[in-house]
Structures are given as C-alpha cells and as structure tokens.
Length: 192
Image 1 (tube, rainbow, N blue to C red):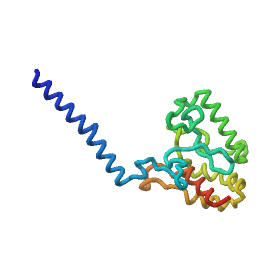
Image 2 (cartoon, rainbow, N blue to C red):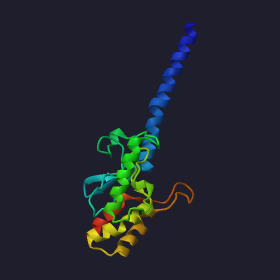
Image 3 (cartoon, rainbow, N blue to C red):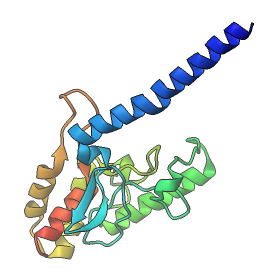
Image 4 (cartoon, one colour):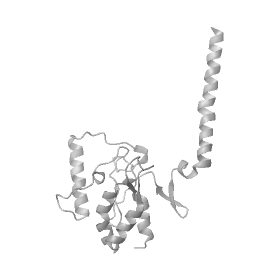
C-alpha cells in the first residue's frame, strides 16, 4: 500500500508540474511571441494612454458618437469585473420595462417614428454585458444623428460605417458587425 501511495503522490507532482506550470508557461510564451497584441487584451491606445479594448464595450452617450449595446454588467453597466447577463427571461416584467424604455430612448435620440423597427442589439444587452460590437443595421440607424451632431454629410458617415463593417470570419462564422470604439475613434480623427 505504501508503494501505491508513493506512485500516486509522484503522479500528482508530475501532473501538477506539467499542467500547472510547464503547459501554462509554454502557452503564455507562444501567445506573447506570436499574438502579443491579442494576448495583452487588444488594447487601443492614443499616444501612450490606453483608452479601451477592441474586446470590451464602452458606454458612449454623447449624441456625436455611435452608441453600443446596452450593458447589464455591474450597477452602471460596462463593468468588466461584473461581466454577466441579467438572466431575466423573455416574459420578465423588469426586462420588458427596461427594453421598452431603451426602445423609446433609441427612437427619441435618432428621431424615429413610434412604429419604426429598431435592431434588437440597441435595446437588449448581450450575454456578457460587454459586447463591443453592434450590427451594421444598428450603426446605419444612427448615421443621421451622428452626422447632424458633427456637421457632416450623412453619406460621409455612411461610408465610414461601410469601412468599419467586419464580415463573417472565414465567410461563415458569426455575423457582420461594427466595432463601436473603432468607429467612434475614426469619427474623432475626421476632426469634427
């Protein structure tokens, strides 16, 4: 029995070293060597200042910016330490009231008629509450407001949205999407 205990203990030590030390260090080294930017969070910088990540949504509330998906992460939303959905079901009164309020807000901000359809990603939070993307339809819906606020022609802003539409990965995975942070940074670079 002592021999079996010694063998079991040796296996635990070996597997702990392999899976708890050697493997993580090797994968971290490979990631830093080949995909350094992604391994460090796909951070977006202006000069030496980190202003966000391409992977985590941010709250844009000014009319001159494109607005992203609502967030249910944390008290005020977009809290990366509290990433989670609301876990409210489709018939939950709180969810229905919140969605109706957001729907009215989107219509009001963008000058839309009461019955005008609005893409769901402008009304409902994503599962993580931190989705950095919106659908192209959601971006195009906001073009008129953003153009007016910045004193730009609508077609100029539409062309900018066109340039920021990311197609499906490998042509089949996911849906076309627009990274809100990248789009808003491009707007700021236009100088208006």
